Picture (cartoon, rainbow, N blue to C red):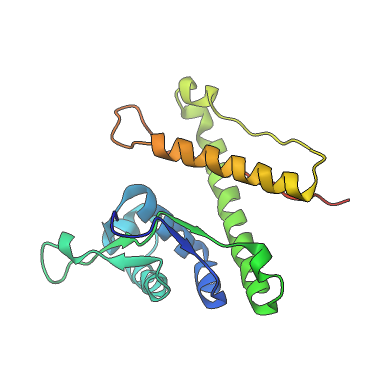
Length: 191
């Protein structure tokens, strides 16, 4: 993926709605985490039927989230897929004046929230079976801050920089390295 931009900035409400599907979010995540795979490999990892995986990959490809990787195929029947970008982002503030884009962004954020919850629940189910060295580093927390809008923007920038720094350090080829999920949120809470 070195020749691809590392991030896809979404503005198209059709693409947002296409991605706002749990199977598609999962498939895109698997391709980003594990690298290129065939439909059969993705079916095995997700538990989805081969036909379903193929359909959803087609929808993701239609909107530029994934692309075929024909150089990996051993024959004409084998189809490999890869994520087209390392990250997908969008700016909710850019969408406020367009009801269609705002609704699509809301749908997509809610779909990602459901995925975050499902992943954390799966972690909690597995935690007792993990090596304590991994559990020691696990964290969940919240803080209630009193900030101005400009300070919230500054906090967002710092969190993004911190995530980017650890992303640069990330290397799946190290013997003890495993996939770790980092999720953060900062938003104005209800009054």
